[in-house]
Amino acid sequence: MTCPRFAPFRPRRVAGRPRLSARLALLGAGLAGGLLAVPPAHAADAENLLRNGSAEAGTLVSPTGWDTTLSDLPTVRFAWDAGTAHGGGRSLYVLNTSDVIPLWHNWSQTLLGVNELGGKELTLRAWVKTGAVTGKAYLLLQAYRDTVLLEAAKAGMPRLQKRQEMNIKPVDDPQLELGWSRKQISGDHPEWTPLEVRLYIPPSTNVVIVRGGLLGIGEAWFDDFSLTPGPARPERPFPLGKNLLADPGFEGNLDEWDFSMPPVEGLRIRADAVAHSGLQACLIESQRRWRMEMWSHVFQVFNTRTLSGKRVRLSGWYKTQDLKNTFACFSVYATGMYGTFHPVVSNAWSGTSDWTFATYEIDIPANTYTVWVRAVLNTGAGKVWFDDLKFEVLGDSSRPAATSSAKKKAPGK
Image (tube, rainbow, N blue to C red; front, side, top):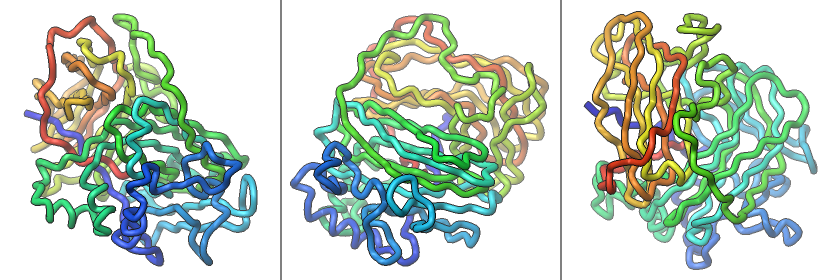
């Protein structure tokens, strides 16, 4: 039984903005120049890899260089706000008034053909303010290896069309997610608040995506983005037996945890008072079973080379209720120079059970750059609680190398 990572909602064209094929055609004209999608906007801001990071330039209603997701939901609104700004006269704004369907609504920029960033560290900074938020505002920095997208840009066509033209089946899609770093804040922040995320860019990365957005109900403003490269900081090995997870007992506001959910009605990930210890646990609940297999995760990402070649253990407590024709499990997923590493999950849980302790051990292959540590529900009717999790390094791996596996779709949230 395998427990693959679900690919969440992907960005689409916003009404009133150019179609993707038109935007890619413009990007494709500069592919030979290296850093193509986002040339610096001002000489004084030469280190900023983002175009129009201050959101000041643009057409009548659209900020230059920025794109948005599209959900086709009437409860979501994007705006180029001339009434609120951290610096200058405008900011990027997103409003969401419903969380019936979980979606990540965000502004984004995509950098194509950025192979020269491999081996460096990127720092993404922005100023954020929020209002009436019951969800989370966030910054997200993602690194991919995606040759199909580059070829689509050269041809000025959508990625899916180019993949079909190249006769690449979904299971053979070469798109590979190599890095992921998110910083998120909950609640109201009426004053401008700085956010920062850092990400090591693995060799062979050729696409970097920057996002500022909102998950859940509320409104958020973003301004004065910057994306700057620098030398990669040295890493120290993790001590054996230490819990590497932040907020392992889910006692905080879950800002230390990331969520992955398919956009289906009635799906929730939240803190709950039914706990193994302390005051809270993490609850994943779904109201129905869907026709296709879909996955929901609460997870933390380790963008580090020091887990490469190590044996690790994920352990903790779970409780299930009415999991029928579905199951929950622990899972560890990794990406590296070899592609993806997704071992078979040897144990999974269904039905109804009281708090039960479980462990999951694997060997992380050599040449790994990113490790995803996940508590998972194979989305179907029922509930599963997770509490008091621990992720630790046990020692060196006995596994000499990894073999490439089928690539999973990369998140677009």
